[in-house]
Length: 216
Image (cartoon, rainbow, N blue to C red; front, side, top):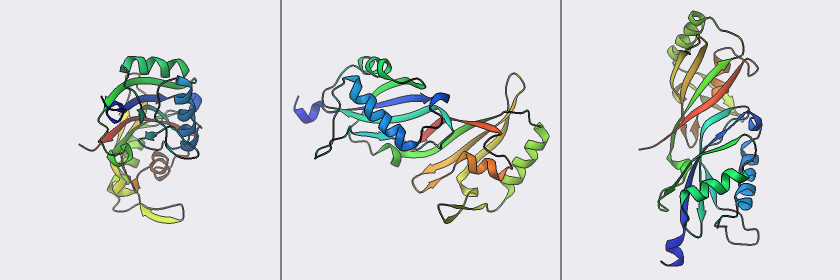
């Protein structure tokens, strides 16, 4: 096997727990670089004066949101069994980062960000919410033709980014929300913006990303 043929692309699925809730996207990237370096795995680095671990996070997670389902690709110079990779990473992971699944994927796949289609979120409220009132708010929001908003000094329409939104009821009777938001490059919906449109501040609920949907 040639040196080029030995290069392996590894895909991780992991959870970001409450202790990392306020760790931003750039800091998560640095966290992963440190973790990959500490793992002792044959990580592939970029060339040049300041080599960095070659890695690719699927999608930025809004600050304050936890996740059960994040994805990351990184490259190794030498193939190893995926269970060995998982063990090395799990042993070096900080509290709040749970390695769930390790697989080997084709090196020819396009970047994870470009494969992103949608993200799913579950919202739990700190205080109980009346189900009928919440259903009325959701119905009114979904009936809107447009939801103009401003993000980074640019006006955009949130409405087409909301692919699905519904009230949920857990086994214990707790009322929450579930939403599927568009997550394509340049057209990404954020759960906090949907919640603002429904009249909730970020101190009233906890958002958890429960799924990343890739294009078929």
